Amino acid sequence: MRQSEPHSTLFKLTQDNYNSKIDWLFNQFPAFQKQGGMAYKPGLSHTLSLLKAFHLDITKLKAIHIAGTNGKGSTCSFLASLMTESGKKAGLFTSPHIYDFRERIRVNGNMISKDEVLSFIKEIQTLKLAFKPSFFEITFVLAVKHFLAQECDICVFETGMGGRLDATNVLHPIATAITNISMDHTEFLGETLEAIAEEKAGIIKNDTPLFLGKKEAHSYSIFKEKADSKKSPVFINEPSYTFDELPNYQKENFNLAIQILRFINKKEIRNDLIFKALNHLEQNTGYGKRMECIQDEPKVYLDVSHNNEGIQASIEFAKKKTKGSLYVILGSAKGKIYDRHTFEQLFSTKISFCVFSNTRSKSVEDWQNINNQFKKEITINRTLQDAFHNLSPLLKNDDTVLITGSFFLISDYNPSI
Image 1 (cartoon, one colour):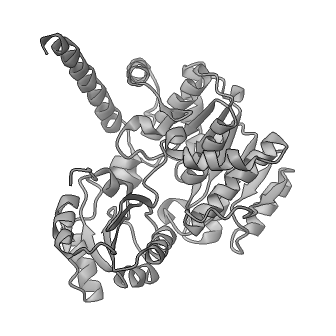
Image 2 (cartoon, one colour; image 1 turned 90 degrees about the horizontal axis):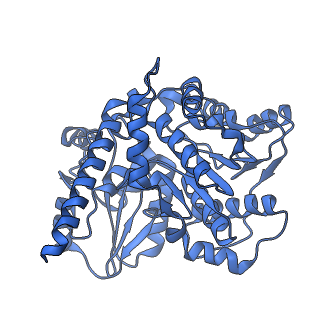
Image 3 (cartoon, one colour; image 1 turned 30 degrees about the horizontal axis):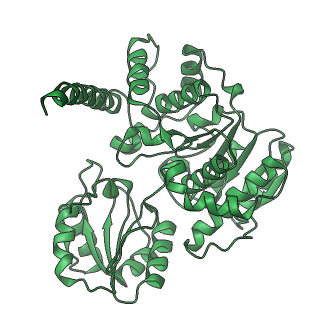
């Protein structure tokens, strides 16, 4: 036992050092995950300056760039898993993370090392810059540095919030994709679907194929006009595979990923490879917490949907899967507004509200205001642990619990609760 103590002490020191550097990264620069809208810094000049400071040639990356309101992270993960099963060394950049910052940057499912993160933060701290880069700009540049060092065959990048002015839009991709357009982040991207589509269309590049998750009336003409002006071919998603175990919206995302890979490989994708990519999804990408069933009898789903369209789809899927009652635990970021149809869907379940530990959470008072608005008396839980404790005596084996509304709520989940 004594022989292991020096190793344990060293691990604790390394872990403490890592945690302190990550805390510094969150606090020193604006981070949307911690601070919300005040962290949003549109524009590409800072990202380009950071790339130059680290002597990184982004044109050396073989990149695929994916935007959209919902499903872009899922599509990125599906595509990276397909690439991995195809024998490629696949880099994957997504956000936000749930438990560990390193979840954002992976190669064939393996997270970037703590040593590499620490080394990069130390370098950032010594740079004499004429500006303060954002958390997202720094994280993106770290991903580029890591993927170049790993000599990745292909790299899949998820945009942050928008498209045109997103830090990731410095990429020179071999293909771009836009999953769908719905209302979200309207204070930054525009207050109409058309305005949001214009922002997302900003990732379309010259002579670079564009893949669309669906042909939507409010956005297709905008995307087509922009693509035509760039001499970029447009491909509409073809839902050729059913994937009965996936929700409908995830079927669309997986089919979109297959279509992109089919184009890149210039040949059909073998069925066995497709099903390996699905079965090994978490191993290949770390993908999880999107309608992830973590328990049976009663079923418990963890889901990170956080806007109207996503939450409605998750409720619809959970209702189809349950034989008993559907209980929903909903957490939400302060300032997040749901439409009446979403609340109608929520109120058709046995719902309770929940505050999460991240400072961006809606407060008890915020949830009480919603109760007052709809003349409801829905239970408001101060923690996810409280929510589980309150529900446990009510649950039967054929019931279902859906925990949804925010990455931050899911990050509070602990199997011991």
